[in-house]
Image (tube, rainbow, N blue to C red):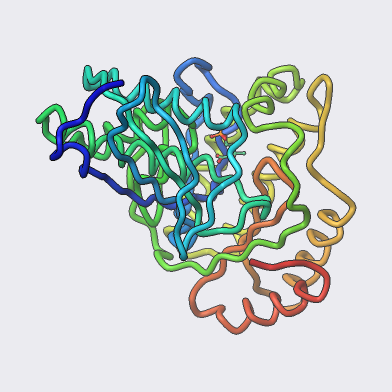
Length: 324
Ligand code: PMV
């Protein structure tokens, strides 16, 4: 047991980080060990979906994780493998500072667990932010830049590096950064099709898609979508942005379906909701940007002036689904 002096005993650090939703997807890795993506990705940061991490010095011989008790946040049900992955990342961060002391790490999300929303981006970003503060203070070094913190975070969970920048974040090779685009205040909804844990994790998806006959074309296709989408946003062509994002998530799911062995996150309900969204777009000649991650749930992004449309569409889907 390491003995902590009185001052150290009361040292505590806390950080909060948001989730993000990619419109141009990170799927496929150039380097698996350190999560270098095969193509650039673009995401919108989701400030209402947050993980909080609290760290304190711990006198034991190993770092430990505990659920964080809080009124605002619900602790994730991190299984043993999840806890180990989290603590392995903490250990990697400690190595960056040459620090050998032990920590108790607590975390919780402000979105319900079992909601089918990936929390690895927000949780790894929050852990990296919190540990960077703690370790910089304990080793009396300057706080590393957000770019540096995002690079470390990427090694724990690729997509977490985009959560350091808002509202729009772009990630290419080893660097994520903020990108200025119109639409800084989008309204985000998720139609929850299923809340169960995914059977194929995103890590496994990154590996399996390498067997798809479409995989070799994927990086150039994603780059093309990125250029087109940045143009559509910059010229404020919302419908065009919708069409590109639709094609982009369909392309990613096509990689899943055509992998060997193939797999799918689509359920009959996913298909129905997607069809209905197309019908609504045709009816209103307007609508949300639609996207899906490696899961069956459907994310919608609206411009602020589409607030009433967002409420109407929410009402339609809330008859059959939980809409967050
Ligand atoms: O960061 P990972 O390894 O969980 O991969 C995330 C992959 C997607 O969520 C499907 C796409 C993305 O860019 O966030």
